[in-house]
Length: 163
Image (cartoon, rainbow, N blue to C red):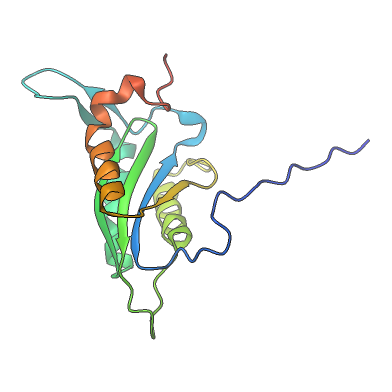
């Protein structure tokens, strides 16, 4: 008896052009949610919990900041690197003529490739990523605040492994 392969459903919206000008909230997880990007620290005069990045987390930070160098029409508006995942709020502002804007998939492919190559752990990231198309200013503000508040809500986070 031959085992049937599972056909994965695409998490992307059908017919949507992910290179359109606008803002996007993206979440990328470490494979098996291993907490190797850093740790949440509290105390020592800190007003609120902070993320202390590991060497791997510093590599991720470096490549997030290189996205805008690679794609001039992409701006990283806000981001947070958590122990086992990363949230990025980015904006695409392409001119749409001679040099089309990259899709979020192309951006994430570049980011994952570069970080995995430098970290040198095959399969470092989970397959795919979660995306949310920002619909309006209120939606943008909600995602912005979520990023800023994520370290202090770490133990409530769905990616927190030790509940």
